Each structure stands twice: as structure tokens, then as C-alpha cells.
Image (cartoon, rainbow, N blue to C red):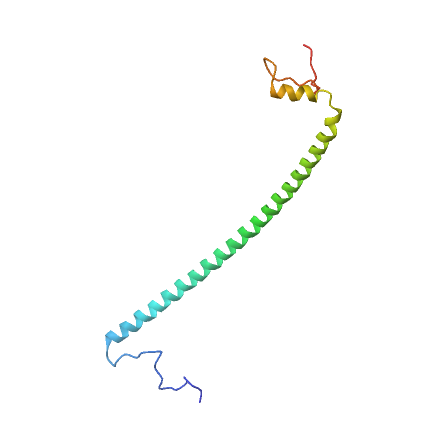
Amino acid sequence: MAQGSDSNDTSYTKSPSPGSKQGSSDDVKRVMRREKNRIAAQKSRMRQTQKADSLHLESENLEKENAALRKEVKRLTEEAKYLTSVLNNHEPLCTGLATQTSDLLYPPHGSFHHQHIAVPHYQH
């Protein structure tokens, strides 16, 4: 015979003494308490699942944002390299560089002016 299948085993259920209203009331309270506990545990598991789902979604969104930011950093780094090479190629050809350097260190009275930068002048 299987263990725990004995009909005289009452370890998991407590039967009240015959004719006792107190025992019946305790049984009802115990059943109600177990039901409330079961519902509370169910809600707790549901909240845990929702929190895990929310964290998973947030993690995916942060990974996408991180990938986009890394892509932008790579693009900006390449742009900086390109602009540096354009500047390096321009420096030997720039006739106003020597005056520009001295102008930056010791600007003429009034304001900065850059002779090598072509700025269109519009007549009124």
C-alpha cells in the first residue's frame, strides 16, 4: 500500500470534536485564510512576472539605444578624422595661416578678422 494513503491518516486535516461549534468555526477560518493566502501568492507571482517582463523590455530598449549611440560615436569619430584630414591638407595651401595664428594670439584692436576665410559681402 502507498505511503500516505492510509484512511486513518488525518495529519493534514484536523477534524473537530463532535458537536463543537468552535471546531467548525476554526475550520472555516482556516479555509478562508488559506484562500486569501492562495490569492495573495497568485498576485505576488503575477507582480513578479510583470516586473521581470518590464525589466526585460527596458533592457532591450537600453541595448537598442546603446547600439544607436555607439553607431553615432563611430560616425562622429569618422567625421572628425575626415575634418582633421581636410584641415591638414588645407594648412600648407593657406596663405593667411601665419597672420591668423598671430591674430589669434594678439588680435587687432576691435575684433578678430580672418583674411583666409572667404565671406561673401552683400551690397545694399
